[in-house]
Length: 271
Picture (tube, rainbow, N blue to C red):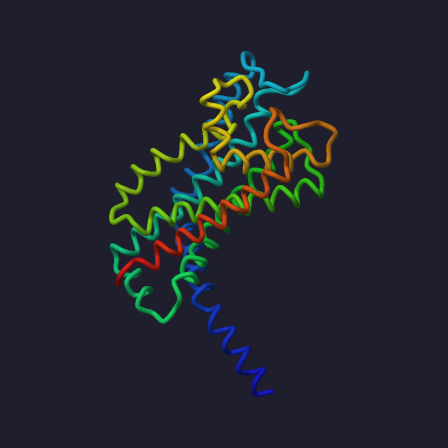
């Protein structure tokens, strides 16, 4: 009994820093209503304006009659919401350093990998919640979600959000100002999203551009997301993206590499 109680107390002690930082990230984000609104509103504006404007003139490669550009563009918009929410949730690291909170966390007897894990889980939770909200709009894009589609889609979104949050942490732990963080993120975010197949498929793109898209990890995350959306229907995802198994494998590897990179970066930081 004593050993069992000791093990339980030790587990609670180990989990407490993780859950505390995780919950802090969520509370702080939802108290800033402007961030919550912009994370959802901006991609929706893109979807409505760009999707409607190009629907009559742009037919994605691999599509069939009855499938519109709005339907093709919808998965890319959901991924854009995950991207914005995951990355910009990591701005808190820069703010915490300026306010002195991060220094207090670093001197605590908590391994850096737990700190990074808590921050990553916070950003993942926020992105996943907002991504699930956008799934309600799937019927408007002509996509009918069943139980299998919903389960696999949420799993892919969680993987994507975790990897993207760690990518943001990998950069945020090195930054001293929010201005510098924004500059790097804007230079990085839009290109990797545009070259993921969200805006146009790799089929028909110039050879050099198609090769860049193949080396973009977000291409595989988006492909896995597209395939998951159509699991319960006879329709197929637009474009000739990578197969589902390969896409899931590379997305999982992306999550591992970004988490390890963020942890190593955090471990190299001094108090």
